[in-house]
Length: 80
Image (cartoon, rainbow, N blue to C red; front, side, top):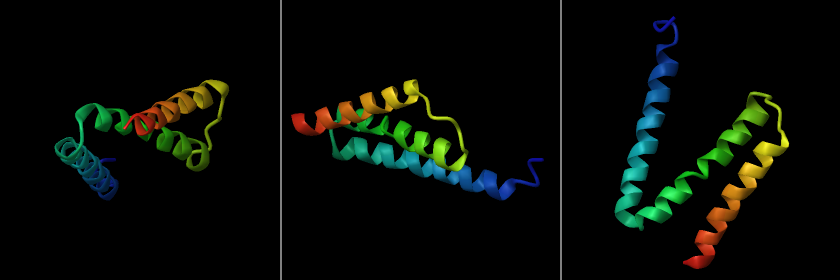
């Protein structure tokens, strides 16, 4: 199984490494609390991928959690 999907495994690992490297770089450019909070907005992208690509159901809990995340990111932007 792993040998059949090695391209997918390598590209996924590369994407994960790149994302982590970007977060570490962002820590050197901006305050750590801001970077950490904005990093959590990846939840929104995961929600979109789940709903539109994987055809998962969208329920009220997911919408509420996403709205709270967006509100937090917005408050960080306003506070700056």
